[in-house]
Amino acid sequence: MVENDDPTRAFVWDCQIDATFWKDKDTGAKAPPDAWPNNGPPGVEVGISAVMVLVEGEWLLDDGGLEPRACE
Image 1 (tube, rainbow, N blue to C red):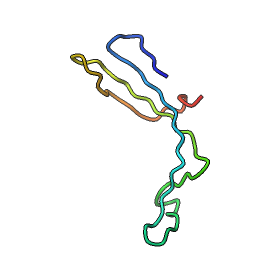
Image 2: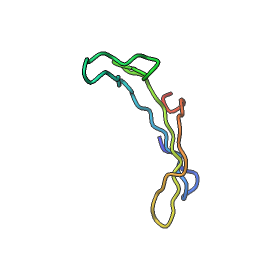
Image 3: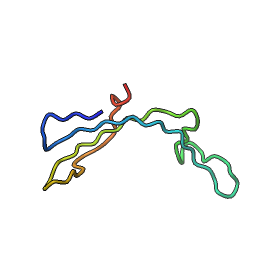
């Protein structure tokens, strides 16, 4: 979703599905949950947002972070 009330500023929301997991390259064992988060299949929704600003004809990232409402 893109919100744009100001022609020089845009708020972009995105919802991603994260099904990553970390494993030991030698043994193939999953990393312990206290070391790395292991989401695995089917995955979890992760909402993010970005604030973009138009500077001299180019869109640049001004701010960003997690945004749970992006997955609603």
